[in-house]
Amino acid sequence: MLRHVILRHVILRHVILRHVILRHVIFRDFKIIIYATFGN
Image 1: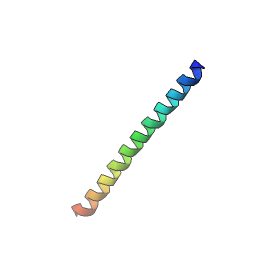
Image 2: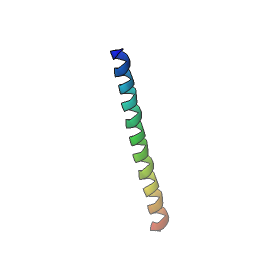
Image 3: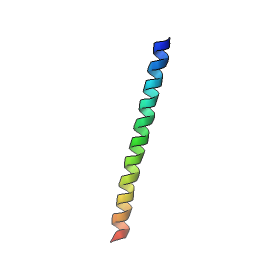
């Protein structure tokens, strides 16, 4: 029972962390694209 709760918590944390990193990378790329488009 306890192992299941710990496993679920670890998986949830991993998914949230991946989502945050992915969003950060997409936002960074989007910012670069906007800068490249309107910078020239």
